[in-house]
Length: 486
Image 1 (tube, one colour):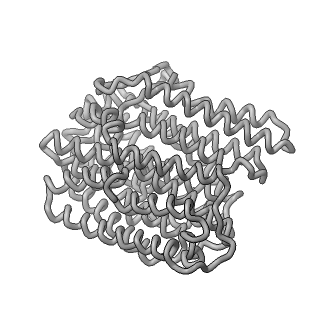
Image 2: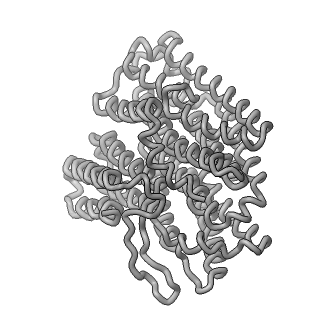
Image 3: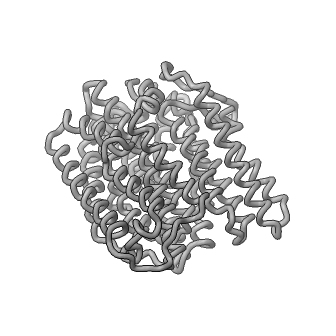
């Protein structure tokens, strides 16, 4: 069933390719149906998941490249399952969002369906070479989405995105090869490497592999100072591209830190934990201050992603050094909550920003004044998404940040105080957004309530954030067994 879920989007991409290009409506509906079927399959995985079992579930293994001992090995854990469901959900919402858009519909739909297969494949891979293959499958379509459907400087942003992430993925591949060569017999099996810890007694080799993985995953997270590609890519990407980039592509780096780096080189991560913590804190604080100074709505939301993903890097450092299993589990659970929460809330913010840009013809924040009077329902959704992003209790952002801050406080007081500084600045920037967009006098006659399907897209994301915030046990029950495992 897991393999079916991963490759369903690819199957529907093939169906879309067979349709005549002139029939854009049929193409869009086929892509939407394929996305909904994929989401239903992902929910089937949830229904059959045993949250008391910390091991691999829905596993399928078969020989892939026998001479180098590489396998097609996929499975889900409590960390990967929420991200697979998030990927399927975002695919469905993105296809609903663009349902009436007939600009080169066939190529657009196929790229997003292919990208979804790559993303879900990464989250399910238990073989490092397979992980790398799916990683690249997820990367290439977004390059074309930005370059072909983006805004004025789309080619520059697409090239910058591709070069940064390609360099990072090559560093990651070198690290994977280091782990492969350290194993006897050689293998790319992630569970086998995590069990053997082949570099535990080799500080230099372990440090080099750690560096390679940090570059590879840090670019995708992104973490300061290798974050520079992100604001340009977000600003120039079409709305649905920005949503996929924020909600899912950044999670490739976050997932890699938690599910690959920490399990495979635990000793090196413990030795260099302070570097992970510092990178997380710098990203967290820098992202908040950088967002505070932005006038471009999409660029502002892009910088908040650096802030939010800083929590994941911080949690990885705390999880690496924590001697108390409860503190480690709290940090890693908070990191997974942050991945899901950020996907929901920042995805909603980019859908909102894109809709406002379509109406007003600009991304300038001040152009959206008076939204509360002209589109009260849409304004309410924006307010909830903003308050969720700043960590208001009752929404998913609070649960994620509370757990990471609590774990950090148990390990290092000064680090926790730095997190509080970033949280205060983030609160200020989101309040600024709400004040400008909702409470200032109207600045444009073009603003109005969006089409019902676009309201529904944002409403689903906001409602899920509220559900997780009010009943966090629904998600924590899935995550806990995995994060509690040493």
